[in-house]
Image (cartoon, rainbow, N blue to C red; front, side, top):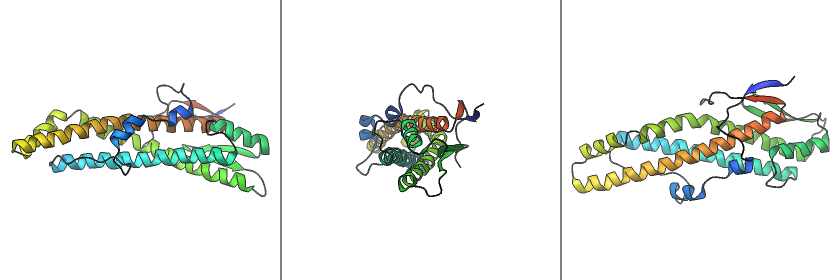
Length: 230
């Protein structure tokens, strides 16, 4: 009988891992500055600017995690000799065929996973695969842990647009300042809407990785609550 593990799931997993890892490039181009990070414009209300800064910081960390996760997955495929479009399941399956399924196994504990190699002397190729599986596990777990708080902060800001505009007008009585700063506010809100969409795509990609690794570990999958931040 297969063991069970609670794995967070999105509304659908009919798309492939490759599709999961792809994000809306138009949205990314609009959201990010030249340095590849989300940056907010000032609205000259200290508390509001601090909240926008917190959102940008949280999203940028998740963006970094997604990049690290994607890089680890591609390097894993590369050292395994798999095509870039191959699934993680296929790559690990190839290694198991080459070295024996009993000697190359995926182990999963909670939301962390690793590649176990039962050989007296681990070949260099498998050492590299183990390293990439480890990085894939860490970046996937970090990415999933960031989603809940980030989404909560973004939703709170989007639901408070009228109040935010009023705070700007109260704090900045000069009309031209109000026009400029309210324009900054609208731009910030549009950016975090797009950041929210990208964050959801990052989260979906991480869930797909987790599902594949759980299946490789011989675990059945059930819906579970979101992973909390550590």
